[in-house]
Length: 583
Figure 1 (spheres, helix red, strand yellow):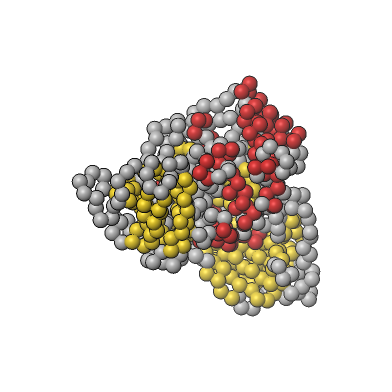
Figure 2 (cartoon, rainbow, N blue to C red):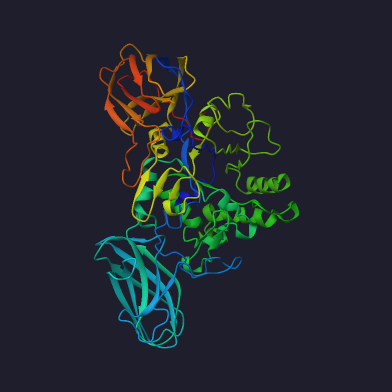
């Protein structure tokens, strides 16, 4: 966790839907037979911050519980609902609830997980449980088909003395595959057995840290420069009594009480807690952005006289992440309210960047902040019309969005389990065994190399209101410099585009050039489990790439032209990421 002590909060701007969903939404009608000129001056550039594109994770749509966190058991502590709402044991069910004779398979309980456990042949699963009984026990721990008729893996727990709570671990190797499996605990012996904190996880997780491999690999593919966590509304709760409390999400998993997220209406065991999010940021090589509660929920709040415990909790959270190992937490690895948070954090951690979660684009903020969060949910067409929304934003005060003041941008919501869709659209769709990226996800991947690049001076001349374009220079790990042109055609007509590139130098050449297009023949096309790559970027070679090119843009498309420059005329300035200006 060494990297987690480097920077626990930086900067954030959040935009949602819009250009990222260009293949999913209807757009305004435009004139046919469009033409456009794009003039690029490669000799004039501004550095783009290394932090520009990242991800925003929220516990919504079962994105964490039953999602990226690989725990297979739902409600492992039999306490869903917690102390503040009615407790229940769902989805646990009883096997042979009322019988005269013990059936061949025994009696017991089973858990179907989050709409079925994905069990794969040859893989090993670790089951951990706490058990207590006044007599000896012989308990079968099994992974079975959804109805219990087919055994996929099983092991027996034999113990003559479990009069005190006893932790038991077993490894199960699956002999078959079933994406809709369940965990069973059964016995054929007479007696009373108590179970608590039952966990089942695949041994093979992302870097061994408990995350579902294929879902985190999709995040790694877009190279996020930061990860904001653990959410927005999830942090607040509908009521403060159900807000996320980071201190209750650390330490041994079996000691975490869990809580009921009453905004998105489901229970989380908080196995995916504050420490795990910091670990995920480290595993992805991303800067962590921690969102904490400042004493508000959707329905209630604390006043300034009672906010100090929330201030201290924020300071303790920072100490946990980056404090001295001898410190208390480091060893464990409203305007008045806001000012208390700001002053306390600034005093204790002057290098931490503080983001105010309010819109400062239309009026000046009445409180200090390093950045503010422009947080918007709207349609693609509305967001497209906001291309120049921040052109008139004051260049004094906190940074937010636009050419010289944006620092970070992220898409949300990030994940959705199809069995509990609380929001639409989302970037990555999954169930227990399958997953795919929506067109929004593929747009994020197209722009992943913009962080840390340089924005070139460009001018788009067109009679269309549905075109936007930009050009950057970017250097890969091999030291090769690319000139990348990205263009969004938000209209329903093809566009004949003439590109002119100046400032490359007389000896420069363009080679190994490619064209990547994200589009589809039908505006309403989308990806699915049956056809996960129906709408994905398609790459082709660009023949005879030159400083002057005539190109054709497909309707409803995002296009990236990647041109390798064989020239030393383009300079790549090296600038500290936190002092960079922005696109």
